[in-house]
Length: 210
Image (cartoon, rainbow, N blue to C red; front, side, top):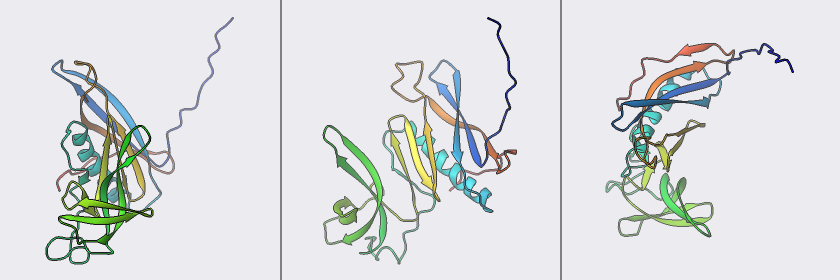
């Protein structure tokens, strides 16, 4: 048999935001990298959208190494007179994100969904309707947020959220200096954007201040 080598066309992706994440492993000063592609819509406001995505990524990376976290990005919160009263209680009829658990046959799933406030007469709770069911939710920043918030959900080693219809999913790596059950420390290393023609751009000058 004679080995045959056939030239392959190297085609860059189109409409993709590529995140390169660096993972620091324990005290060994060891680093690994992972790349994650995010499918982007065609929009004239791509710089603003990328900035919002990267702010969510920055928060999400922190949450992957923090077991005691609020599942909502602080940026974009907008509690105001149109969605809460003077006592800070969400108004009936307003849309809010809320944290709840769904009981499956053998396990519980923790979810963040967008529901409608239907009752505020509870003691430090509100009743929220979602998909025909009503949920009683505590009134605090770890359980509810206004519709303008960006909810981030961490499930084990994976972080997921949606910004303006764009789905973002990042999976961390287990720390190789222990048994791998905890996340190596992630940080954003490089960001690239590929436009509708596959042209590659380096993304820079983004800010993580809130």
